[in-house]
Length: 496
Image (cartoon, rainbow, N blue to C red):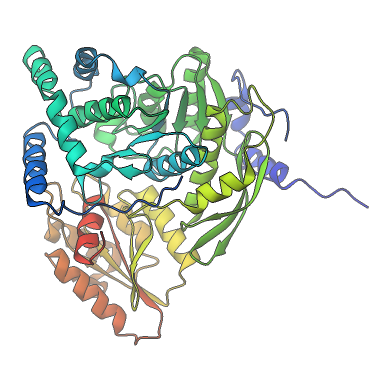
């Protein structure tokens, strides 16, 4: 009887054959090779029920809003380093897993957090941006910190913030203050491990004062090109700044030029690299009710029959990256040749939630929210919708930021949208609805574009268009284009 092929070896062959240049990437790199084969699900918090707490939170939000926003940057870690110094270096009180990349960072962070929690570790997670509440950005034990604690942390470190402001050329930014709050809250908890997502880039990102023993790089694509670079390689050079001396790098599938940059940096700092499609990956996946069933190849072996309650192939790849990151954190692959407990892994993945990422928030007709805001994210979303939902007719609601590749985003959705309702959210960054409509007409044609300046009217128009096919026709609505658009739609549709 002939020997059955190893499914993972077939993946390796396919990955290698897909791009011969991977042989070049292989040269000179030191890679991680295995010698052998608590619940997340946190909901997005609503406004505090206590009027006094809500008033205090709004006061903090107002003070933070008076600082440089997340899109105004002065590339430097000098200010955040000064704040950490005054606070007593809280970011060094716990080990960290640092996550960079273009798409998939938050979902991957949530999966890593769920896995670590399932192994009884106390976790802190710092992600951005938020869907509805600023408190979402700082999580302890899988849930956003309470509004009262958020206010308390801000007030505790406020004197230190003011001290640094007075000493620096520029005041601490909105994101820098939040980063300081997160690191202080994690040290005070205290947490066993912090899972930290960069805000933008890597080398000069405010989060990059931690020494992540594991650096995770999700897929790199073009985004923030005015600040990070116009090619994947240029963007990768900035993001490679999270790779620290002696760390383990978990590298998702990348464009070849981006991978070359990452591996070169890893060699320079004597970091160990594990690459998706080589040392770990997705062995198999199939659509299941409420998500998908996957088999993953980790650094220590194979993990079968994992239910992942998220839609789309991209989430399966995020899961493989998250699993490898947690294995690396526990020393599997380099120091140990074993798998983690299978039942614990299954339980952890089954608990994962990622609000605003192909999230179903209504039925009859089905309304799905997805925070895709660049072409790569939109393509992944479109593929996930097509595979998992099978709508007979899909209506899009799009509200995008003016500093994004809006044409590329719309072009990614054009094949799956029967009609698109263009709108805008409440952010000052939101693209003017008439400008967005002009681009949409060029992509979709005039007869497929509906213009509704108000998001609530846009949602109503889209639902009405979907209902025109009758109750049992299988039409749906996808709300997308911006995290802010998704967050506001979530509120309007009664999710909290």
